[in-house]
Image 1: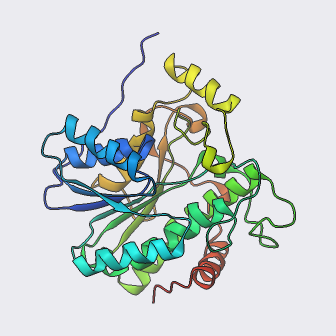
Image 2 (image 1 turned 180 degrees about the vertical axis):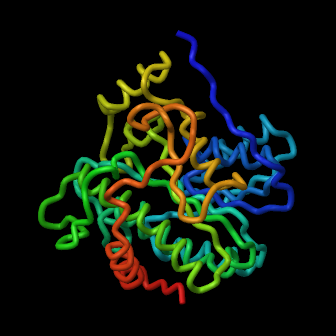
Length: 312
């Protein structure tokens, strides 16, 4: 069955600087390429320099003259995040788009970041929280749009306030849900705080639905030596145009949220097919898990305490 192709128009981004985390493969690579193709200068902070160099080469092969640059970043290390923040602040170039995309999913056993946090909460949420805080002066200078990627897994679950680090009873999927709920709550709270403080930052959130990315594939670095059954099923369905999306279509909600002149501060964007697992991008109804402003404020305070980053 031929798959219908979906796309969105992206306005000219010449003169704009974008930062995309997790741009060495999957959604992040596709997002970075699209932004570069629209004329943006794209900074690609990556943990694996070999993959990063291959990603830059791929973009430049497709788009000769693309302004894409690698930086070193390990989102599971506050020291690494701080080093990148200091480097970019020293350069002084305003940032106009920040896409908090990178993530890790369901290590079979509990793992910790360099700073002792549960790996998924520490990387997916705290890492991006700290990065955004370090870049705040540049984001303010660029009157930036910040788009943070949550996950369809965050439709259910909750923040495990009694044990956010999952020390006592680790459950990989529940911990992943928590981390992605946290990402969504952060993006929405950033919108509210920017409005209140006059930072000039527009913050919204997006999710990709379901697509055959590397999140559930073999990831030896997180203790998964073979592809999961889930990712094999997703690849099968995606290749046949059934139910789920592709990497290309899954990148569109984030691109819409980050670049569309109609995207709203505090908005939520995702695929529009039944169940929001695939299809064209559009406005997404906010899930119950993301509507609690009290939890968002509580999470913000906890994140400042754990990361040592205060937005002011």
